[in-house]
Image 1 (spheres, rainbow, N blue to C red):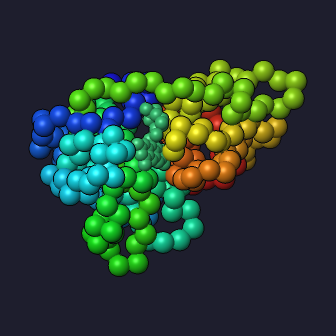
Image 2 (cartoon, rainbow, N blue to C red; image 1 turned 90 degrees about the vertical axis):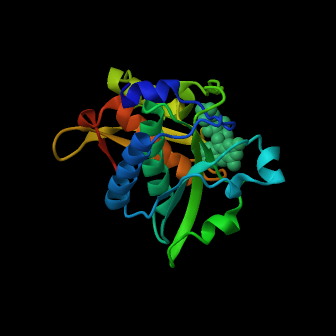
Length: 233
Ligand SMILES: Cc1cc2nc3c(=O)[nH]c(=O)nc-3n(C[C@H](O)[C@H](O)[C@H](O)COP(=O)(O)O)c2cc1C
């Protein structure tokens, strides 16, 4: 399964079975976390066999059950942390999906104080992602139409690569499934002659984390060689 296929089959899963995550999968995910931390100036960490963060009435109210593993998305407090957290956290999510591990981004229903104690001094917690073997594979979310989240220059048809990017962006997890983002093909080219795309966030909870996740999905769907971002991450 490649990353594009992982985008297509991933759905949020909040209830997990007792099957442990095997050592090879842990090692592969750990290696990806280290690459992402390096590239994204983050301090993400994987918590294995740690059920306490989701052992609360709040978590069960949020429909989470048997969450024993999770990714802590965190990094030095500062500009762009949330968007980078979204982008690189989703890289781990998509690799997990390819390795048969289900996931759910979580903003609310976990013990924040407990997780914050695991951070390095000066770091800020963005969110966590629950990981494990799902009791189910989840279900596809309701989605906005492509025309509601994308724009092309007036009087032009969207190129196929752009449409594929928007399709992948619409398959991205977003907080409360808000899909509050806009992907815009601009009437300009980059220094190396590629069409330029702008991604912007609407307002809503965790909209900047969503933006990072959507950025990664668009890149995978559209293929980075076909365009340049107006602003890089
Ligand atoms: C930034 C972010 C925060 C989220 N927070 C929560 C949460 O606190 N509780 C929860 O049950 N789901 C949470 N989700 C999962 C979303 O509800 C889910 O991604 C969305 O409904 C789309 O469904 P899908 O992931 O199955 O495609 C969050 C997702 C994102 C991206």
